[in-house]
Image (cartoon, rainbow, N blue to C red; front, side, top):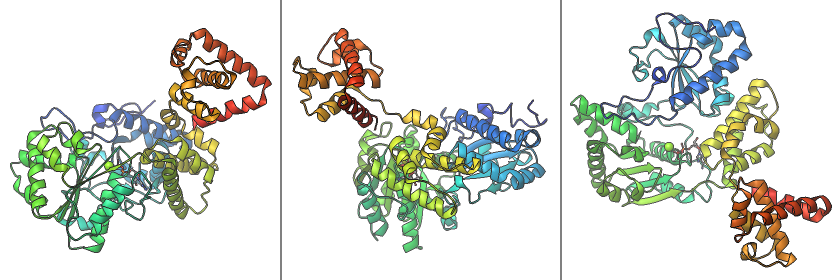
Length: 507
Ligand code: ADP
Ligand code: MG
C-alpha cells in the first residue's frame, strides 16, 4: 500500500516511529531531553490526520506519488518540518501541494503557521535538529490557518540572532487584549517597555500556559526596539539558555556566550521553570542575572509558577527572582476570551474579506473552550480553516462538530457542591437546608431537585449522593429522582426551574 523510498528512513507506513520524529535538542549526557512543545506521538498522529485529509481531497494518485513519500520531522514554534525524498520532489511538492498542506495542517493543528520543506538528501545525520535550514523551502501564505503573520527572524536580532529566539511580530501591545486577569501584568510590562531605567528588576511574570506571558515579553521587546533601536534586547527561552550554555561548555568556549549575554540592555528569559536540574547552568544563569542587575540592565523573567514555587531551583536564586516585581496572570474569564476572539476574527476577516463568523460562534467558543488563550485561538483557527477547506459556512453546529475532541477535553466537571450551591441560590433557601433534616416543602422540593440534578449531571452513585445530602439513604435519593421526573411531566413551572438550573450549571 504505502510506497517506501529505498535509501531513506524518513517514513514508515503513514506515521513515523517516535525515534525518527525526534526533534528535541540532544540531552548531552544529562539523560534528559529538553521539553518539547508537542510530543512525537502527537506529531505523528497529526501528520497522519493531515495526510488522510489530503488523500481524500486530492485523490489517490497524488497520495501515492507525492504525499506518502514525505516525512514529518517535527513542529517547532508553529513551523512544521517536512521532508521530501529529493530536491526535485521537494520543489514540486512545494509549488503544487504547499498551500493544500498548510491548509490541512491548519485544520488539524491551529498552531501551525508555516511549513519548512526539505530535501532528505540534504539533511545531514539522523537528528532533525541538525538539518540545515539553508536548503529549506518555506511555505507560508495568506491562509486561514495563518491568521497570524509569519514568524520570521527579526533582522534586528543582529549579532544576537543566533543566541536569542525570534520575536513573533504579532505579539505586540496593540494586539494584547487587556482584562481583569492580566491587567496588572500588562501594566507592569508597559512600564518596563516605556522606562529608560529599570522600574523594577527583575520583572517576573507568571501564570499558567497559554495566558500571554510570551506575548507580553515579545511586546516589551518590540516596543523597546521601536522606541530605542540602539538598545539591545535579547529574548530567549530558558531551554535555549541551557542548550547554548551546555554547548559552550562542551566546546570549552563559554566566554563569547557569557560576554554576549552580559552586554545586552534587556535580557528576557522565558519559562525559567525549565532551568532546574543542572547545577552549572543555574549557576551561570544566576551570575548573568546578578551581573545585569548590578549594571542596571533590565531583566524580564517568566515562569508557569511563582518564584517561591520553582522547585529544582536553588533557594538563593528563587528568592532573588522575587526581588523585583512579581506579576501574575490569572486564568481568563469569559469576557476576555470573547474580546480576544473578536480581535482574532477581525484579523481573519481582514485577510479573507468573504469570511463570515457569526458572533454566536465566538460566544460559543468563549463559553466552551478552556481558559487557556492558546486553546481558544487554536479552536477559532481550526474552525476557520475547516470552513474554508470544505467551503461551508461557519455555524455553531459546525464548530461543535469540528471541535469535538477539544470540547470533550474542556467539558466542565460539575460537582455536587456546585449543584447544591446553585440550587439553594436559585430557590432562595439556605445552603445548610440542602443538608438539613427539615421536611417543609419550601426546602424539601429544592433539595429533591438538587438530588435529581446530581444524578443527571454527575457520575456519582446514589449512595454517594445521599451522603452528600446530609447522610441520607440512597433510597431517599431514588425517591427524589422519581418524584422530580414525575413532576417535570405535570408541573410546567417546576420543569422550567429544572431546565434553567441545568443550563446555569452547564455554563
Ligand atoms: P504563555 O507564554 O503564557 O504560555 P502565550 O503568550 O504564548 O502564552 O499566549 C498564547 C497565545 O494566546 C498567543 O497566541 C497569544 O498571542 C495569545 N494571547 C494570550 N493572551 C492574550 C491577550 N490578552 N490578548 C490577545 N492574545 C493573547
Ligand atoms: Mg510562553
